[in-house]
Image 1: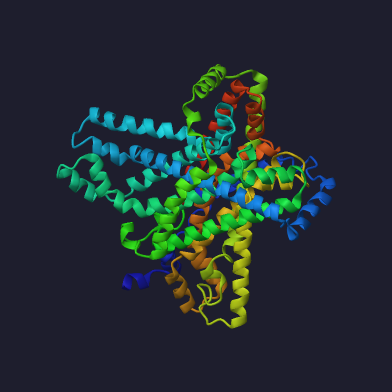
Image 2 (image 1 turned 45 degrees about the vertical axis):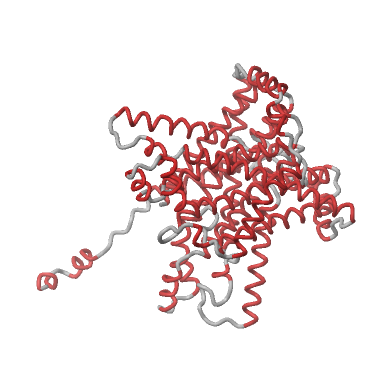
Length: 582
């Protein structure tokens, strides 16, 4: 101790001082790159030079806004809205059911656990090759269908099968099934394996060992993600109407093109109601069954439980039975003709399409155009996710019950009645905005912005941004609601203000998850840029829709190559960014 006292004061302070991290690190570089990408995207959108606002469209936009307070509520319109809502719901149920079948089979076969179990206890390069090669092959086979947006699947299948309800079901089920398989495989691979090893050691066959040793423990997360995928299927089913499949999306497009805005708002309110009830039902069932929250499956704390211990709640049981009964009803209601899939004419058309797509088009002028359109598509996604991330972040706080309401995590003091009412009003308003934003599909938002904006990147970016804002805001609000309250109570005990609790208690625990969600949605958004191209928003989606409608399959093949490359680039960038923020 005497040696420490004999040290000069400056040396003692220096010896006990903690070194600050350098401001020049990977996170700082990521922020600089993001700011540069946003500025470049504004330039690609023509924001700095060209005239992007169509001043002549303001009267039309005002007429559209006024129609929201006097929608068409005539008997014929309400019957049409009800029938269209049931069609949309049936498409979503059928597509989600098909995706669940594909996801369950593909998820098991694409897990490392399945192929490691197949290899037994042997060692050596030969066994490694026998287990790794099929796993990589199945994973690669599932990557292609999920990279193609459901609208592109729909446009392609219409040319093969014709305009039949089976097109919408397949267009939702195939890409959603590939996505579900990927997530299911990740959930199963992260499940503890002790029971599986014990069963295999006792000589139980591989499939039975998986069914009894792994799946019961993984089932709660699998079921939770199934609920989330069904919510996505509702929105995808509405988009299917834009390519002529029927339902709310189809009627919305007809009303918008004929400028019948009162009818359009009736259909929009029906779509909002359907989306809101689906989200509410999904949330209630998940909460009663104690399932993970939406796609935040890895955030669950404590040991995993089997779902059978938490299904004693009658509401959850009746809901699951109703969902199971809804599947056959939906297939009956849409009257999908499955026989068309095996008809000789379908096989002939498919063979002709594959023959006409080869060799792909590679002339210099066309390649140069695709490079330019790829830049537009990338800039559109960057602007969209910047808007969605910032807007969702701001709305997530008033939309979280434990943060927005007085007496919550920010302020543990007893709230007055008037303060509670104001907090509840803000909560409902924020959640209402988020519901409207995500209930209206991206192309409808883009079409609305085209009232006052010229066709190009900007209306597409705003449409994608508003739609993803609704999704991200809800996901971020759930992150806020699941935040650990113990550090917040400790800050309150030290007399910290509400702002200090927010800066030092809430943000450090939630920002990494916010960014992870934004990056995840960016991967989805780059695929969704194709659907705003259907309404003239620019990018690869616009030219791809034109090529499919003109049966130019050589150009379609080349455009898809560029689209796959762009999607792969965004996926790699997103994965690298997520590693940086961890």
